[in-house]
Image 1 (cartoon, one colour):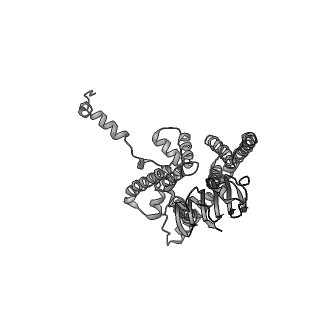
Image 2 (tube, helix red, strand yellow):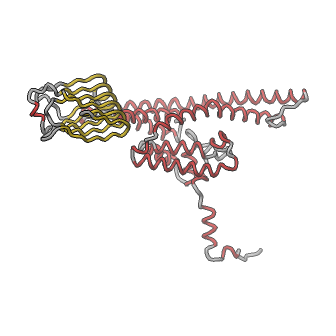
Length: 398
């Protein structure tokens, strides 16, 4: 027995170098989990890589999804670029036959996804290209559903039949007896595959029904509590969506230990989209709204409109001079906003429009992210502050 230590272990810094080489792992070395997955195994794979509980990663992804959709960006990028831990290549490598270029593409893709996520967190300006995601992601999902997934099933089926018959998956024998054996093996493998899928669907359905009932009960309780709070202190409409979303999140957390929360994830994504839409559009009337105040008492300091046409007609004001020095705020969502002002009254306009056209005092501004400040007339002015998401905005004298 030789007790002489390895010289490499006694040299200064050798142990720390070996420790670093064994434990220093990059993000591109993460593998998606194939046995602890809920959707694509990304969170479980990252948790295993970091040696932490997968629930923490899932909570972080959900939380980041509420911040500029950065969590969704990172999750989809990881699903597309990271291979599974069972040896299957990544979706990107499978779609585009990357072969030896896969590690480089993976590193670049993850870096780009991280940059996009950071930009999305920093501010809304990061979503100047938001339309790309809404076109590319559904197209990628449909491509996977109707092209990649059936091809993978066929390959698995051929591999199973080849294993049973002793032939390669892509070769059929010209010998009638051997061919019959291969066909029988293929048929048996196909039947076994279909039965196994049916069994798995039945098990998932049986496990999910109780979880769904529990989650729906939590949603009902959350909405009831929100309704009580709304009557007591007053809440905005998105609060109900947030309450339902929290109930779904609790259901997903329970599903990590028991049941199959896959369907709840889809429900959560739908509620997230609904929350974004509800938050993007100011609360107010839908359709046409016309206001024609003629006195100071009838003039409100602010007006709200959701979707449609909003018209504020000040041209019939009995004493136009009383408008001088007053400030009127208008918050609108999507549609057209028209303000009529009387002749002879100085007007200062501060307008913000995410997308569309602004027309005032013979000038026009159009495009996206319009921020206009203009004054017509001299002296104490009527101050109009108009914020609108999308559509047209007009200030007209008459």
